[in-house]
Image 1 (cartoon, rainbow, N blue to C red):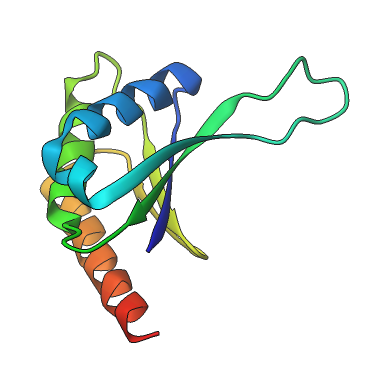
Image 2: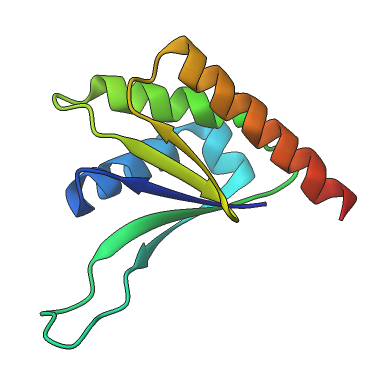
Length: 118
């Protein structure tokens, strides 16, 4: 399953989340993490990082991922909004309260089940 994550705070926050997830043994073991650059437009100084891509594998745990993202966000001095996308579906974490985290987990588990049947 391919998941894309963006962070409201920009490149520094995205790099921080990437490092946090890479340091989480459950996430690191079951997903490949890649920082992606946005395409440059005429007049831009250069490409910037604006997306974190996860390619999940066997043993993927939506719960571990969702808890790691929520914990990272709550550990930040400024709590940036995190957007998680798979295909056309988007889940935004603006408060990282229990309801948002549960919604993210349910959505990821449903998406993972769909991917296994294709």
